[in-house]
Length: 535
Image (cartoon, rainbow, N blue to C red; front, side):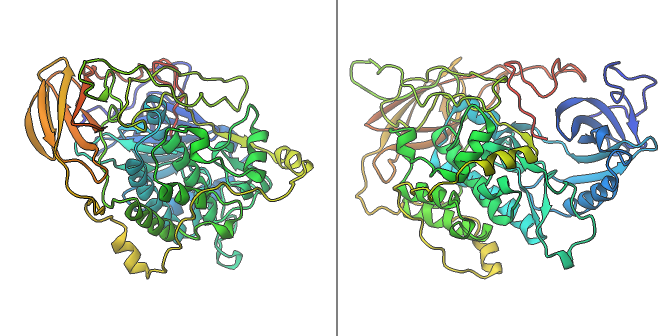
Protein backbone atom coordinates (compact mmCIF):
# COMPACT_ATOMS: atom_id res chain seq x y z
CA UNK A 1 0.00 0.00 0.00
CA UNK A 2 1.28 3.43 -0.92
CA UNK A 3 0.55 6.03 1.73
CA UNK A 4 0.39 9.78 1.25
CA UNK A 5 -1.42 12.82 2.52
CA UNK A 6 -4.45 14.05 0.61
CA UNK A 7 -4.61 17.42 2.28
CA UNK A 8 -4.52 20.39 -0.04
CA UNK A 9 -1.32 22.37 -0.05
CA UNK A 10 -1.46 26.11 0.35
CA UNK A 11 0.81 26.66 -2.63
CA UNK A 12 1.98 24.57 -5.58
CA UNK A 13 5.29 22.79 -5.23
CA UNK A 14 6.47 24.18 -8.56
CA UNK A 15 5.64 27.80 -9.41
CA UNK A 16 5.94 26.88 -13.09
CA UNK A 17 2.89 24.61 -12.90
CA UNK A 18 -0.01 25.97 -10.84
CA UNK A 19 -1.66 22.54 -10.64
CA UNK A 20 1.15 20.85 -8.72
CA UNK A 21 0.06 20.44 -5.12
CA UNK A 22 -3.52 21.37 -5.88
CA UNK A 23 -6.51 19.16 -4.98
CA UNK A 24 -9.14 18.88 -7.72
CA UNK A 25 -12.73 18.65 -6.50
CA UNK A 26 -11.60 17.49 -3.05
CA UNK A 27 -10.58 14.15 -4.59
CA UNK A 28 -7.26 14.23 -6.40
CA UNK A 29 -4.09 15.77 -4.98
CA UNK A 30 -1.64 16.36 -7.83
CA UNK A 31 1.86 15.11 -6.99
CA UNK A 32 4.02 15.34 -10.10
CA UNK A 33 4.01 15.52 -13.89
CA UNK A 34 4.12 12.18 -15.71
CA UNK A 35 3.94 13.43 -19.27
CA UNK A 36 2.39 15.89 -21.67
CA UNK A 37 0.89 15.86 -25.13
CA UNK A 38 -1.32 17.79 -27.50
CA UNK A 39 -4.46 17.21 -25.43
CA UNK A 40 -2.92 18.26 -22.12
CA UNK A 41 -0.80 16.96 -19.26
CA UNK A 42 -0.87 13.78 -17.22
CA UNK A 43 -0.07 13.94 -13.52
CA UNK A 44 0.56 11.43 -10.80
CA UNK A 45 -2.10 12.08 -8.16
CA UNK A 46 -3.42 10.64 -4.92
CA UNK A 47 -7.13 9.89 -4.74
CA UNK A 48 -8.94 10.66 -1.50
CA UNK A 49 -10.22 9.00 0.63
CA UNK A 50 -8.98 5.74 -0.92
CA UNK A 51 -5.30 6.70 -0.68
CA UNK A 52 -4.89 5.32 -4.21
CA UNK A 53 -2.45 6.54 -6.83
CA UNK A 54 -4.02 7.53 -10.14
CA UNK A 55 -2.90 9.02 -13.44
CA UNK A 56 -4.78 12.30 -13.84
CA UNK A 57 -5.13 13.63 -17.37
CA UNK A 58 -5.85 17.37 -17.36
CA UNK A 59 -7.08 18.84 -20.63
CA UNK A 60 -5.29 21.73 -22.29
CA UNK A 61 -7.02 25.07 -21.55
CA UNK A 62 -7.34 25.67 -25.29
CA UNK A 63 -10.19 23.14 -25.26
CA UNK A 64 -12.29 25.30 -22.96
CA UNK A 65 -15.94 25.96 -23.72
CA UNK A 66 -15.22 29.54 -24.75
CA UNK A 67 -12.62 28.66 -27.37
CA UNK A 68 -14.39 25.56 -28.70
CA UNK A 69 -18.17 25.72 -28.26
CA UNK A 70 -19.62 22.27 -27.67
CA UNK A 71 -16.31 20.75 -26.58
CA UNK A 72 -17.37 20.28 -22.96
CA UNK A 73 -20.43 18.27 -23.98
CA UNK A 74 -18.37 16.14 -26.36
CA UNK A 75 -15.69 15.65 -23.71
CA UNK A 76 -18.10 14.38 -21.06
CA UNK A 77 -19.93 12.16 -23.56
CA UNK A 78 -16.65 10.61 -24.71
CA UNK A 79 -15.40 10.15 -21.13
CA UNK A 80 -18.67 8.45 -20.22
CA UNK A 81 -18.39 6.04 -23.15
CA UNK A 82 -14.73 5.13 -22.64
CA UNK A 83 -15.27 4.68 -18.90
CA UNK A 84 -17.55 1.77 -19.76
CA UNK A 85 -14.63 -0.21 -21.21
CA UNK A 86 -13.88 -2.96 -18.73
CA UNK A 87 -11.45 -5.29 -20.49
CA UNK A 88 -8.39 -6.18 -18.36
CA UNK A 89 -6.11 -5.20 -21.26
CA UNK A 90 -7.59 -1.68 -21.40
CA UNK A 91 -6.59 1.11 -19.04
CA UNK A 92 -9.40 1.73 -16.55
CA UNK A 93 -11.10 5.13 -16.36
CA UNK A 94 -11.81 5.82 -12.68
CA UNK A 95 -13.46 9.23 -12.74
CA UNK A 96 -13.82 12.42 -14.75
CA UNK A 97 -15.06 15.89 -14.02
CA UNK A 98 -14.69 19.65 -14.09
CA UNK A 99 -13.52 22.03 -11.38
CA UNK A 100 -15.23 25.29 -10.50
CA UNK A 101 -12.60 27.20 -12.46
CA UNK A 102 -13.07 25.10 -15.60
CA UNK A 103 -10.31 22.47 -15.35
CA UNK A 104 -11.41 19.30 -17.18
CA UNK A 105 -9.80 16.06 -16.04
CA UNK A 106 -9.92 12.27 -16.41
CA UNK A 107 -8.61 9.98 -13.66
CA UNK A 108 -7.14 6.67 -14.85
CA UNK A 109 -5.55 3.73 -13.10
CA UNK A 110 -1.88 4.31 -12.32
CA UNK A 111 0.30 1.77 -14.13
CA UNK A 112 3.87 0.76 -13.37
CA UNK A 113 5.86 -0.54 -16.30
CA UNK A 114 7.12 0.72 -19.63
CA UNK A 115 5.60 1.29 -23.03
CA UNK A 116 6.37 -0.91 -26.01
CA UNK A 117 8.06 2.12 -27.56
CA UNK A 118 10.50 2.27 -24.68
CA UNK A 119 10.97 -1.50 -24.53
CA UNK A 120 11.68 -1.86 -28.25
CA UNK A 121 14.13 1.06 -28.10
CA UNK A 122 16.00 -0.82 -25.37
CA UNK A 123 16.07 -4.36 -26.74
CA UNK A 124 15.20 -4.09 -30.43
CA UNK A 125 13.17 -6.81 -32.12
CA UNK A 126 11.33 -9.28 -29.91
CA UNK A 127 10.87 -13.05 -30.30
CA UNK A 128 7.91 -13.77 -32.56
CA UNK A 129 6.13 -15.84 -29.90
CA UNK A 130 6.26 -12.89 -27.52
CA UNK A 131 4.96 -10.53 -30.20
CA UNK A 132 1.98 -12.79 -30.87
CA UNK A 133 1.20 -12.85 -27.16
CA UNK A 134 1.28 -9.04 -26.99
CA UNK A 135 -0.78 -8.67 -30.17
CA UNK A 136 -3.33 -11.10 -28.80
CA UNK A 137 -3.92 -8.96 -25.71
CA UNK A 138 -4.11 -5.73 -27.72
CA UNK A 139 -6.64 -7.31 -30.09
CA UNK A 140 -8.83 -8.36 -27.17
CA UNK A 141 -8.79 -4.81 -25.80
CA UNK A 142 -9.73 -3.33 -29.16
CA UNK A 143 -12.40 -5.96 -29.74
CA UNK A 144 -14.32 -4.73 -26.71
CA UNK A 145 -14.02 -1.12 -27.88
CA UNK A 146 -15.22 -2.04 -31.36
CA UNK A 147 -18.20 -3.91 -29.94
CA UNK A 148 -19.43 -0.74 -28.21
CA UNK A 149 -18.89 1.30 -31.37
CA UNK A 150 -15.48 2.88 -30.69
CA UNK A 151 -12.26 2.81 -32.69
CA UNK A 152 -8.92 3.85 -31.22
CA UNK A 153 -7.31 5.62 -34.24
CA UNK A 154 -3.96 6.17 -32.49
CA UNK A 155 -2.67 2.68 -31.73
CA UNK A 156 1.13 2.70 -31.50
CA UNK A 157 3.88 1.30 -29.24
CA UNK A 158 3.80 4.41 -27.04
CA UNK A 159 0.13 3.69 -26.29
CA UNK A 160 0.69 0.09 -25.20
CA UNK A 161 2.05 -0.40 -21.70
CA UNK A 162 3.92 -3.54 -20.61
CA UNK A 163 3.31 -3.84 -16.89
CA UNK A 164 5.87 -4.80 -14.28
CA UNK A 165 4.76 -8.26 -13.20
CA UNK A 166 6.07 -10.96 -10.91
CA UNK A 167 4.94 -13.76 -13.20
CA UNK A 168 6.58 -14.99 -16.40
CA UNK A 169 4.17 -13.57 -18.97
CA UNK A 170 3.63 -10.12 -20.44
CA UNK A 171 0.55 -8.26 -19.31
CA UNK A 172 -0.20 -5.26 -21.50
CA UNK A 173 -2.67 -2.39 -21.32
CA UNK A 174 -3.90 -0.31 -24.23
CA UNK A 175 -3.80 3.39 -23.34
CA UNK A 176 -5.07 6.71 -24.58
CA UNK A 177 -8.48 6.32 -26.13
CA UNK A 178 -8.40 10.13 -26.35
CA UNK A 179 -8.73 10.04 -30.15
CA UNK A 180 -11.53 7.47 -30.20
CA UNK A 181 -14.24 7.89 -32.77
CA UNK A 182 -17.68 6.38 -32.92
CA UNK A 183 -18.43 4.37 -36.04
CA UNK A 184 -22.07 3.74 -35.17
CA UNK A 185 -24.65 4.78 -37.78
CA UNK A 186 -25.62 8.42 -37.42
CA UNK A 187 -29.16 7.50 -36.37
CA UNK A 188 -27.71 5.56 -33.40
CA UNK A 189 -25.15 8.22 -32.51
CA UNK A 190 -25.87 10.89 -29.89
CA UNK A 191 -25.51 14.50 -31.08
CA UNK A 192 -21.99 15.94 -30.78
CA UNK A 193 -20.79 12.39 -30.18
CA UNK A 194 -17.10 12.84 -30.90
CA UNK A 195 -14.39 14.67 -29.04
CA UNK A 196 -12.46 15.23 -32.28
CA UNK A 197 -13.43 17.82 -34.84
CA UNK A 198 -14.48 17.16 -38.40
CA UNK A 199 -11.88 18.03 -41.00
CA UNK A 200 -8.90 17.37 -38.75
CA UNK A 201 -6.68 14.30 -39.10
CA UNK A 202 -5.59 12.80 -35.82
CA UNK A 203 -3.08 10.03 -35.29
CA UNK A 204 0.57 9.16 -35.74
CA UNK A 205 1.80 8.94 -39.34
CA UNK A 206 4.11 5.97 -38.68
CA UNK A 207 1.15 3.84 -37.59
CA UNK A 208 -1.74 5.41 -39.50
CA UNK A 209 -3.96 3.42 -41.84
CA UNK A 210 -4.08 4.76 -45.44
CA UNK A 211 -7.74 5.73 -45.18
CA UNK A 212 -7.04 7.85 -42.09
CA UNK A 213 -5.08 10.24 -44.30
CA UNK A 214 -8.42 10.92 -45.99
CA UNK A 215 -10.10 11.34 -42.58
CA UNK A 216 -11.98 8.07 -43.00
CA UNK A 217 -11.73 5.24 -40.48
CA UNK A 218 -13.53 2.18 -39.15
CA UNK A 219 -12.47 -0.82 -37.00
CA UNK A 220 -10.27 -2.11 -39.82
CA UNK A 221 -8.09 1.00 -39.38
CA UNK A 222 -7.12 -0.34 -35.96
CA UNK A 223 -6.32 -3.68 -37.61
CA UNK A 224 -3.84 -1.89 -39.88
CA UNK A 225 -2.23 -0.02 -37.00
CA UNK A 226 -1.86 -3.28 -35.06
CA UNK A 227 -0.12 -4.73 -38.12
CA UNK A 228 2.35 -1.82 -38.11
CA UNK A 229 3.05 -2.38 -34.41
CA UNK A 230 3.66 -6.11 -34.98
CA UNK A 231 5.92 -5.35 -37.96
CA UNK A 232 8.06 -3.06 -35.82
CA UNK A 233 8.27 -5.46 -32.89
CA UNK A 234 9.28 -8.37 -35.15
CA UNK A 235 11.99 -6.74 -37.28
CA UNK A 236 12.93 -3.63 -35.34
CA UNK A 237 11.40 -0.77 -37.34
CA UNK A 238 8.04 0.31 -38.78
CA UNK A 239 7.39 -0.64 -42.42
CA UNK A 240 7.51 2.96 -43.63
CA UNK A 241 9.69 5.84 -42.54
CA UNK A 242 10.85 9.08 -44.11
CA UNK A 243 12.27 12.45 -42.97
CA UNK A 244 8.89 14.16 -43.34
CA UNK A 245 5.55 12.93 -42.03
CA UNK A 246 3.84 13.74 -45.33
CA UNK A 247 6.20 11.30 -47.06
CA UNK A 248 5.37 8.60 -44.52
CA UNK A 249 1.66 9.08 -45.23
CA UNK A 250 2.32 8.91 -48.97
CA UNK A 251 4.08 5.55 -48.49
CA UNK A 252 1.16 4.19 -46.47
CA UNK A 253 -1.09 5.16 -49.37
CA UNK A 254 1.00 3.95 -52.27
CA UNK A 255 3.82 1.56 -51.35
CA UNK A 256 3.63 -2.11 -50.45
CA UNK A 257 5.21 -2.92 -47.09
CA UNK A 258 8.70 -4.39 -47.39
CA UNK A 259 9.24 -8.06 -46.71
CA UNK A 260 10.87 -8.97 -43.42
CA UNK A 261 13.92 -10.33 -45.24
CA UNK A 262 14.46 -7.03 -47.04
CA UNK A 263 14.52 -5.23 -43.69
CA UNK A 264 16.51 -7.83 -41.79
CA UNK A 265 17.84 -10.78 -43.85
CA UNK A 266 18.76 -12.79 -40.74
CA UNK A 267 15.32 -12.73 -39.11
CA UNK A 268 13.74 -16.03 -38.05
CA UNK A 269 10.07 -15.07 -38.11
CA UNK A 270 8.02 -17.95 -39.57
CA UNK A 271 6.37 -17.18 -42.94
CA UNK A 272 2.94 -17.79 -41.41
CA UNK A 273 3.53 -14.99 -38.91
CA UNK A 274 4.80 -12.66 -41.64
CA UNK A 275 1.70 -13.44 -43.70
CA UNK A 276 -0.47 -12.56 -40.71
CA UNK A 277 1.19 -9.13 -40.45
CA UNK A 278 1.03 -8.49 -44.19
CA UNK A 279 -2.68 -9.18 -44.28
CA UNK A 280 -3.21 -6.61 -41.52
CA UNK A 281 -1.22 -4.16 -43.68
CA UNK A 282 -3.36 -4.53 -46.79
CA UNK A 283 -4.02 -1.15 -48.39
CA UNK A 284 -7.68 -1.90 -49.01
CA UNK A 285 -9.66 -2.33 -45.78
CA UNK A 286 -11.76 -5.10 -47.34
CA UNK A 287 -8.60 -7.20 -47.84
CA UNK A 288 -7.58 -7.04 -44.17
CA UNK A 289 -8.99 -9.04 -41.31
CA UNK A 290 -12.47 -7.61 -40.93
CA UNK A 291 -12.62 -7.69 -37.14
CA UNK A 292 -10.49 -8.30 -34.08
CA UNK A 293 -12.15 -11.72 -33.80
CA UNK A 294 -10.62 -12.54 -37.19
CA UNK A 295 -7.26 -11.15 -36.06
CA UNK A 296 -7.32 -13.41 -33.00
CA UNK A 297 -8.20 -16.41 -35.14
CA UNK A 298 -5.37 -15.46 -37.51
CA UNK A 299 -2.92 -15.32 -34.60
CA UNK A 300 -3.99 -18.77 -33.44
CA UNK A 301 -3.65 -20.23 -36.93
CA UNK A 302 -0.26 -18.61 -37.53
CA UNK A 303 1.09 -19.87 -34.20
CA UNK A 304 -0.20 -23.36 -34.88
CA UNK A 305 1.16 -23.45 -38.44
CA UNK A 306 4.54 -22.24 -37.17
CA UNK A 307 4.70 -25.17 -34.77
CA UNK A 308 3.50 -23.70 -31.50
CA UNK A 309 0.41 -22.59 -29.70
CA UNK A 310 0.01 -21.22 -26.21
CA UNK A 311 0.64 -18.36 -23.87
CA UNK A 312 4.11 -17.05 -24.55
CA UNK A 313 6.65 -16.38 -21.84
CA UNK A 314 8.28 -13.01 -21.40
CA UNK A 315 9.85 -11.09 -18.58
CA UNK A 316 10.56 -7.96 -16.72
CA UNK A 317 12.13 -5.05 -18.68
CA UNK A 318 15.52 -6.77 -19.03
CA UNK A 319 13.89 -9.87 -20.51
CA UNK A 320 15.35 -10.34 -23.94
CA UNK A 321 18.77 -8.77 -23.89
CA UNK A 322 19.57 -8.14 -20.27
CA UNK A 323 22.63 -5.91 -20.11
CA UNK A 324 25.75 -7.95 -20.62
CA UNK A 325 23.89 -11.03 -21.77
CA UNK A 326 25.10 -13.36 -24.50
CA UNK A 327 23.63 -16.57 -25.83
CA UNK A 328 26.12 -18.54 -27.92
CA UNK A 329 26.96 -22.17 -28.60
CA UNK A 330 30.10 -23.63 -27.09
CA UNK A 331 32.79 -23.44 -29.75
CA UNK A 332 35.14 -25.75 -27.96
CA UNK A 333 37.88 -23.15 -27.81
CA UNK A 334 36.05 -20.63 -25.69
CA UNK A 335 36.10 -18.05 -28.48
CA UNK A 336 33.07 -15.99 -29.43
CA UNK A 337 31.97 -14.61 -32.75
CA UNK A 338 32.17 -10.86 -33.27
CA UNK A 339 29.41 -8.35 -32.66
CA UNK A 340 26.44 -8.44 -34.99
CA UNK A 341 24.66 -5.34 -36.19
CA UNK A 342 21.05 -5.06 -37.23
CA UNK A 343 19.12 -2.68 -39.49
CA UNK A 344 20.00 1.00 -39.45
CA UNK A 345 18.12 3.25 -37.01
CA UNK A 346 14.84 4.67 -38.22
CA UNK A 347 15.18 8.32 -39.24
CA UNK A 348 13.03 10.90 -37.50
CA UNK A 349 9.90 12.10 -39.24
CA UNK A 350 10.07 15.49 -37.60
CA UNK A 351 13.37 16.76 -38.86
CA UNK A 352 14.16 18.78 -35.76
CA UNK A 353 13.73 16.01 -33.21
CA UNK A 354 16.15 13.31 -34.32
CA UNK A 355 16.86 10.55 -31.83
CA UNK A 356 19.83 8.23 -32.06
CA UNK A 357 20.10 5.27 -29.73
CA UNK A 358 22.49 3.04 -31.60
CA UNK A 359 25.03 0.47 -30.57
CA UNK A 360 26.04 -3.10 -31.13
CA UNK A 361 24.56 -6.17 -29.52
CA UNK A 362 26.26 -9.06 -27.78
CA UNK A 363 27.50 -11.78 -30.08
CA UNK A 364 25.28 -14.67 -31.11
CA UNK A 365 25.74 -17.40 -33.64
CA UNK A 366 22.93 -19.55 -32.32
CA UNK A 367 19.77 -17.58 -32.94
CA UNK A 368 20.15 -14.37 -34.97
CA UNK A 369 16.63 -13.22 -33.95
CA UNK A 370 17.33 -12.82 -30.28
CA UNK A 371 18.65 -9.28 -30.26
CA UNK A 372 18.58 -6.25 -32.50
CA UNK A 373 20.37 -2.97 -31.82
CA UNK A 374 18.09 -0.32 -33.10
CA UNK A 375 16.91 3.19 -32.53
CA UNK A 376 13.15 3.19 -32.21
CA UNK A 377 10.76 5.86 -31.17
CA UNK A 378 7.07 6.71 -31.34
CA UNK A 379 5.94 9.91 -33.08
CA UNK A 380 2.57 11.44 -32.32
CA UNK A 381 1.51 14.31 -34.60
CA UNK A 382 -1.62 16.36 -35.10
CA UNK A 383 -2.13 16.84 -38.83
CA UNK A 384 -4.50 19.44 -40.27
CA UNK A 385 -6.27 19.73 -43.58
CA UNK A 386 -3.09 20.92 -45.19
CA UNK A 387 -1.77 17.39 -45.04
CA UNK A 388 -4.81 16.08 -46.86
CA UNK A 389 -4.36 18.72 -49.51
CA UNK A 390 -0.70 17.83 -49.91
CA UNK A 391 -1.51 14.15 -50.22
CA UNK A 392 -4.26 14.78 -52.75
CA UNK A 393 -1.88 16.76 -54.96
CA UNK A 394 0.31 13.70 -55.43
CA UNK A 395 -0.61 11.16 -58.05
CA UNK A 396 -1.66 7.96 -56.33
CA UNK A 397 -0.19 5.88 -59.13
CA UNK A 398 -1.01 2.22 -59.75
CA UNK A 399 -1.93 -0.10 -56.93
CA UNK A 400 1.17 -1.21 -55.05
CA UNK A 401 2.65 -4.56 -55.94
CA UNK A 402 2.15 -6.82 -52.93
CA UNK A 403 5.20 -8.17 -51.17
CA UNK A 404 6.05 -11.80 -51.89
CA UNK A 405 5.00 -13.56 -48.74
CA UNK A 406 2.69 -16.41 -47.87
CA UNK A 407 -0.97 -15.51 -47.62
CA UNK A 408 -2.49 -15.73 -44.18
CA UNK A 409 -5.06 -18.52 -44.02
CA UNK A 410 -8.67 -17.39 -44.14
CA UNK A 411 -10.10 -17.70 -40.64
CA UNK A 412 -13.15 -19.89 -40.28
CA UNK A 413 -16.16 -17.94 -39.01
CA UNK A 414 -16.63 -18.38 -35.28
CA UNK A 415 -19.58 -17.62 -33.09
CA UNK A 416 -18.99 -14.72 -30.64
CA UNK A 417 -19.14 -17.01 -27.65
CA UNK A 418 -16.64 -19.37 -29.28
CA UNK A 419 -14.29 -16.51 -30.06
CA UNK A 420 -14.34 -15.38 -26.46
CA UNK A 421 -13.56 -18.89 -25.24
CA UNK A 422 -10.84 -19.60 -27.78
CA UNK A 423 -8.84 -16.37 -27.34
CA UNK A 424 -6.50 -18.06 -24.93
CA UNK A 425 -4.08 -20.17 -26.88
CA UNK A 426 -3.66 -23.73 -25.67
CA UNK A 427 -0.59 -24.62 -23.59
CA UNK A 428 2.64 -24.27 -25.52
CA UNK A 429 3.15 -27.62 -27.29
CA UNK A 430 5.52 -28.53 -30.15
CA UNK A 431 3.64 -29.90 -33.15
CA UNK A 432 6.60 -31.11 -35.18
CA UNK A 433 6.96 -34.86 -35.78
CA UNK A 434 10.73 -34.72 -35.60
CA UNK A 435 12.28 -37.34 -33.29
CA UNK A 436 13.29 -36.39 -29.77
CA UNK A 437 16.83 -35.08 -29.40
CA UNK A 438 19.34 -35.11 -26.61
CA UNK A 439 18.99 -32.42 -23.97
CA UNK A 440 20.93 -29.16 -24.23
CA UNK A 441 23.18 -27.89 -21.47
CA UNK A 442 22.72 -24.25 -20.49
CA UNK A 443 25.72 -22.72 -18.73
CA UNK A 444 24.12 -19.88 -16.78
CA UNK A 445 26.01 -17.05 -15.14
CA UNK A 446 25.20 -13.67 -13.67
CA UNK A 447 26.99 -10.48 -12.72
CA UNK A 448 27.25 -10.51 -9.77
CA UNK A 449 27.25 -14.25 -9.14
CA UNK A 450 24.98 -16.02 -6.68
CA UNK A 451 21.64 -15.15 -8.29
CA UNK A 452 18.79 -17.59 -7.71
CA UNK A 453 17.67 -19.17 -11.00
CA UNK A 454 14.05 -20.19 -11.58
CA UNK A 455 13.09 -22.45 -14.50
CA UNK A 456 9.51 -23.52 -15.23
CA UNK A 457 8.37 -22.16 -11.89
CA UNK A 458 10.94 -24.04 -9.82
CA UNK A 459 14.18 -22.84 -8.24
CA UNK A 460 16.99 -24.86 -9.83
CA UNK A 461 20.03 -23.34 -8.13
CA UNK A 462 22.33 -20.34 -8.01
CA UNK A 463 24.72 -18.97 -10.59
CA UNK A 464 27.09 -20.17 -11.91
CA UNK A 465 24.84 -23.07 -12.85
CA UNK A 466 24.60 -25.85 -15.42
CA UNK A 467 21.00 -26.59 -16.44
CA UNK A 468 19.83 -29.37 -18.73
CA UNK A 469 16.81 -28.47 -20.91
CA UNK A 470 14.99 -30.32 -23.70
CA UNK A 471 15.38 -28.98 -27.25
CA UNK A 472 12.49 -27.43 -29.14
CA UNK A 473 10.98 -28.86 -32.31
CA UNK A 474 13.94 -27.58 -34.36
CA UNK A 475 16.50 -29.00 -31.95
CA UNK A 476 17.42 -25.61 -30.48
CA UNK A 477 17.56 -24.44 -26.90
CA UNK A 478 14.37 -22.66 -25.93
CA UNK A 479 14.06 -21.83 -22.25
CA UNK A 480 12.70 -19.05 -20.10
CA UNK A 481 14.56 -18.43 -16.84
CA UNK A 482 14.51 -15.76 -14.17
CA UNK A 483 17.34 -14.41 -12.03
CA UNK A 484 16.83 -12.88 -8.60
CA UNK A 485 19.35 -11.54 -6.12
CA UNK A 486 18.77 -9.43 -3.04
CA UNK A 487 19.46 -5.77 -3.73
CA UNK A 488 19.09 -6.21 -7.50
CA UNK A 489 16.18 -6.02 -9.92
CA UNK A 490 14.61 -9.32 -10.85
CA UNK A 491 15.45 -10.18 -14.47
CA UNK A 492 14.00 -12.72 -16.86
CA UNK A 493 15.30 -13.91 -20.19
CA UNK A 494 14.27 -16.12 -23.08
CA UNK A 495 17.34 -18.21 -23.96
CA UNK A 496 17.73 -19.64 -27.41
CA UNK A 497 20.67 -21.34 -29.01
CA UNK A 498 21.92 -24.21 -31.12
CA UNK A 499 24.38 -26.91 -30.21
CA UNK A 500 24.94 -29.18 -27.23
CA UNK A 501 26.01 -26.30 -24.96
CA UNK A 502 24.67 -22.75 -24.80
CA UNK A 503 26.29 -20.12 -22.61
CA UNK A 504 24.29 -17.28 -21.10
CA UNK A 505 25.35 -14.48 -18.78
CA UNK A 506 22.87 -12.03 -17.22
CA UNK A 507 23.99 -8.68 -15.85
CA UNK A 508 21.77 -7.62 -12.96
CA UNK A 509 20.81 -4.03 -12.27
CA UNK A 510 20.82 -2.63 -8.74
CA UNK A 511 17.50 -1.63 -7.28
CA UNK A 512 17.00 2.11 -7.36
CA UNK A 513 15.62 4.25 -4.59
CA UNK A 514 12.15 5.58 -5.33
CA UNK A 515 12.22 9.18 -6.45
CA UNK A 516 10.53 11.75 -4.30
CA UNK A 517 7.42 13.41 -5.63
CA UNK A 518 8.16 16.09 -8.18
CA UNK A 519 11.75 14.95 -8.73
CA UNK A 520 11.51 14.56 -12.47
CA UNK A 521 13.52 17.18 -14.24
CA UNK A 522 11.81 16.76 -17.56
CA UNK A 523 8.24 15.59 -17.94
CA UNK A 524 7.81 12.48 -20.02
CA UNK A 525 11.53 11.76 -20.46
CA UNK A 526 13.86 9.26 -18.87
CA UNK A 527 17.51 9.83 -18.00
CA UNK A 528 18.58 9.21 -21.58
CA UNK A 529 16.24 11.90 -22.88
CA UNK A 530 13.97 9.33 -24.51
CA UNK A 531 10.47 10.77 -24.95
CA UNK A 532 8.00 8.19 -23.75
CA UNK A 533 4.58 9.69 -23.03
CA UNK A 534 1.97 6.93 -23.01
CA UNK A 535 -0.88 9.31 -22.29
